[in-house]
Length: 92
Image (cartoon, rainbow, N blue to C red; front, side, top):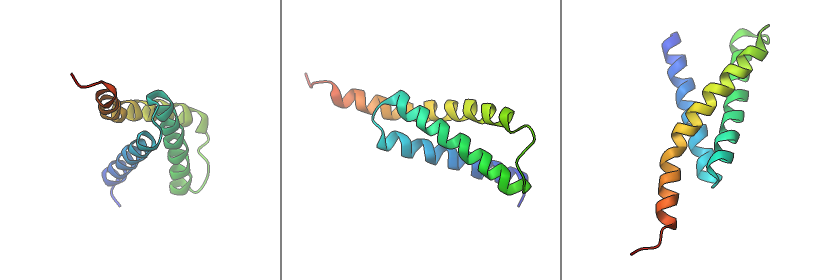
């Protein structure tokens, strides 16, 4: 499988995880944190499966994937937050 296809599939899985977290957890920041943690774990597991062993610099990869997962989860959660705020506002 080409490398660019692996990256696209990984990014799509990150987006799917973020959507699932924001769909089930109503609090924006808590859902983003949960999504970032799940994305971080998924990234480490996928790296282990790809390499066959744990990366020697796994702690750097963990911090990096948590940061990237946080960005994805926060961006994906914005439409959820907007819809929930609009639903809370009373009609005029």
